[in-house]
Structures are given as C-alpha cells and as structure tokens.
Length: 111
Image (tube, rainbow, N blue to C red):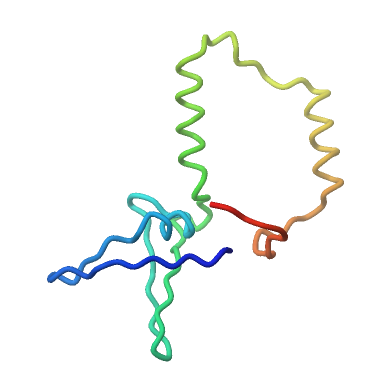
C-alpha cells in the first residue's frame, strides 16, 4: 500500500473528518467503521470488517454501477454466458490456482 499522509484538524468537540485519500486507501465510505490504535506514542488506523466479516469495499459501488447500467439498457440486452465461456473461465481460474488476498501486491499501486 502506498504511503498516505493527510493533516486534519480536531474540533472543539473532539471530532475530525477522515480525509478522502485516507478513506480511499482504507476502502471505507459512508457508514464504514475504522479503529484507532495508540501504541508507543503512535496512532494507527485500520478499517473494520463489516458485520458479515466478508464485505468487499468495492462490492457496493460495483453493484450500484451494475444496477444503473441494467436500468439504462433493455432487458433483452442481458444474456447468460454460454456453457463454453463458463468452461473457459473455469479453466483459466484453475491455471491461476489458489490466491491469498492477504499477499502483498507486487508492482505500483495507484489510488
């Protein structure tokens, strides 16, 4: 993950706004939850998993995109994939093997 550093101000009520770049780097949006950890004089922030523990931060925006796209297109333009394409995709996935989502990402990552 690239280094992201942002400065924000704490209000008289002890509140602050989590900067957009930080929210994006953590993959959290409106209603998302973050945790602060203070250790040895430093603070770290990390995103908390959703109630189901498996939520993907990109899933909700992706599903919204699909819903918008489907609403804009006639129903007959949406078709099921063919059995041949499904078999091809399964073969490609088998070639990749098991992927550990916690592995480090190689190469440059941009937000």
